[in-house]
Image 1 (cartoon, rainbow, N blue to C red):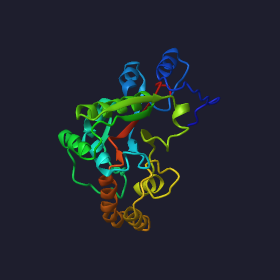
Image 2 (image 1 turned 60 degrees about the horizontal axis):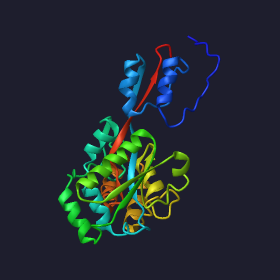
Image 3 (image 1 turned 90 degrees about the vertical axis):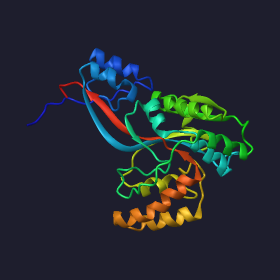
Image 4 (image 1 turned 120 degrees about the vertical axis):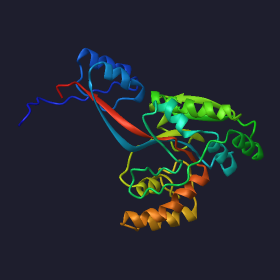
Length: 270
């Protein structure tokens, strides 16, 4: 039957989620847009209803290859090799997601092709960074101040340091971060889900695209992606995506540690 509803009011509490918790506690709100992973247990204990869904939303630690030393593939690959994506999932997002494979195509995308799994190689990463002549270079990993994004950046930085790679962390408010998000040498960006993997790759990694924050430009990648975009049949597209995913993964331009599960909470009356 019909449910009476006088109106809907949207309230922005900013990036400090404690304000949302307090709003639930005081009865000011009935439903939130999204619950960060490290607040889920708190909200569950408040007797709220939880909704969850697996997504292709992710966070990428990307280098911009127009900035040295990230124009050197050895440096980029060393950063990748130093990081255990599953460990970052556990530390950065409390394990509430699925492990990424550094090619920005999700298992829930219809054209996803499963590549061989890669293991962390801290010693190999340190050697490769030294071979590139960058053993003493200090990387600056920039993130927004949102808790889970900051925590994920901290987890990656910790793994890099454990591998003998120097890194400092810079955390910026959203109002500052988004002014230059495509220009930072080394930073982390949230990418929300698109229905198809080819949509994400065309937006974020095809040569010359406005949202190509890595400045990645690879003719072979572009050609293969163009072919994949022309195929309506997911099974046929999947075969082409094997090469597309491999080229992007091998380039080292992103560490893509996990795919989020997303959560929201509501009072039982909703």
